Length: 122
Image (cartoon, rainbow, N blue to C red; front, top):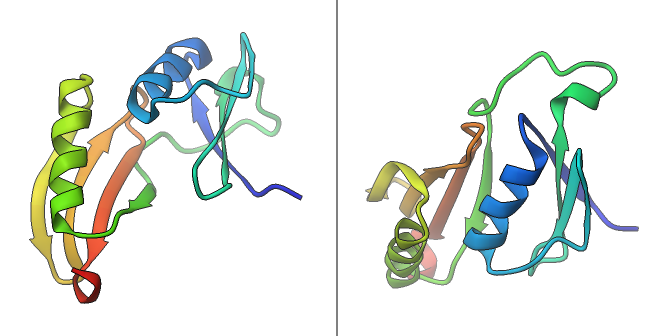
């Protein structure tokens, strides 16, 4: 059994292109209304056109976050530079927070993507 996180998107093809660029990997499944990526952790990330979701979603992007844990603060900074160069919109630059170092990017629908390193592991 594979665990899947689904994000409801406005344009599945545009979102698939964004995540392909950002993650450096192709979707394992793609159609006009859906794309599926397998992340390094084994978690599946589905991008589903919100027009076809039943029941219809009642929230928009930005109400939660998808977290990407990295090994240390230097890896946070490196990921930030990489994602920025790939055109990601940034909501928060690398910042020291109470749990460790983190930044937040936004996908085309405003879904928050947090890259972080826990302070104890730095």
